[in-house]
Image (cartoon, rainbow, N blue to C red):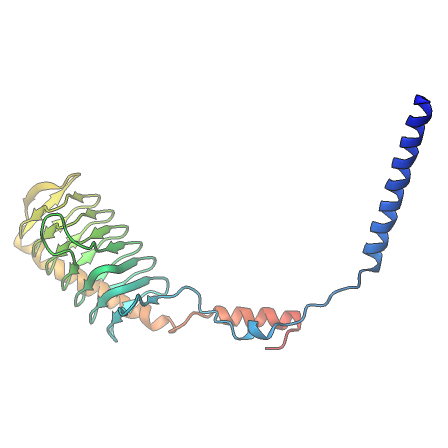
Length: 247
């Protein structure tokens, strides 16, 4: 009896397997070929890519007519970019908690992150203010700090809440300015935390605004090469034509 039961179970399993295979094969064979139909919504899509201007509540970033803001920059909230200023590729200026100001002929170079806190622990203004003829080196991080006119902030520098860089000063690359630290006028600071190195010469202070003007001239060349919106939509239209989809 046991042998008969095993044989019966094996035969039943084989029959079920063969039936399932035939049904599955028939289902694949009977499935009709599908054609790609263009969706009416796809034509209305906007292919301009990343949003550069992001309003937050009642706050809308303001950019002067002759300021240069690279196509992949993000300006959000209370951000103001004044005449002749430039914000270069990959930078993020997030004014969701407080104001951020980029002054006349100032420049924020590639991959910088600028933010502002609700309030400063030092009691100083929590806004982030970059005055005229200021150069912010690439990959720098600024948070609720004030940089007075004609200063240079080296690459990969970090300026924390309430820090102040007075006019005609230079911060070397990779420096970290702790919260509430003040860098007096006409001095060179460097290190982590930033420390006094030496006093700048008169010739060195004269070169600071010249650097900002040179970068401004370069930004004009870049601005003339960019359209207001990206040209990705041209590639999308070409791809649609290759698929036979009407535009």
